[in-house]
Image (cartoon, rainbow, N blue to C red; front, side, top):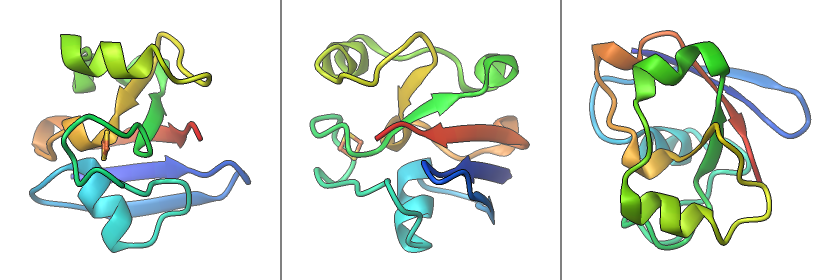
Length: 101
Ligand code: FES
């Protein structure tokens, strides 16, 4: 699936992933602003992204644990997701994610 990241600086980074989480893909390619400090277990929010509004149907919505974690984050909004909770599959193809922190 093609995943596009937009950094805080406005840089667009397009990556192609086949498996694993979006956070892992970003960390592997050194996408700035996605750190994945907790290793993908929903407890650090350093993988926080905002999903483009028209792509929410592709990503689905956040789980309860994820929402609880996001509530602690100043940059959270209705389009917030923790990218470690987004599993890469064909369903995500074309998704555009803005890095939140
Ligand atoms: Fe820590 Fe996603 S990597 S919450």
